[in-house]
Length: 177
Image (cartoon, rainbow, N blue to C red; front, top):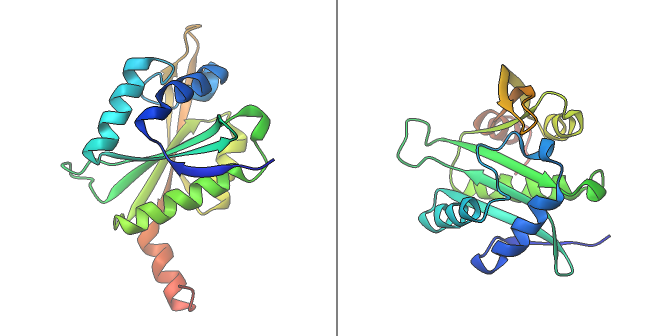
């Protein structure tokens, strides 16, 4: 299966909402907002315009099959940190698509001079945890009963982090650019 990766643009709004609606609710629980809602996607696009989020989409033909976002807080104490958010269609998992999007996010983070990246996911999303750990993220915290689905059930939230400064120093020490 092929895919093209590019920046998320305003004209993609309806396709992103349709993509989010196609995912199981459990896949969305790590997000702070429900991106199946048009006003939430409008706020996402507004944040992109303001430079608070940098976002990529992966398309297969005219269909969005994955999204990735790098969320920033340029005015906060943690402006050196970016939060990575990744969603991949169920049928496309394990195909390398998530890794491709993460590499794109890593390049954006490096261009923005970020020293650290974080990612959140429910602790039972073992495939996502393995993907992030495979590119160098490490478990940093677990928040018990942090998110609640529409069914009322709570889920623990894992927080993983990636120390970009440390990894860059290690790469430089062994001659990797």
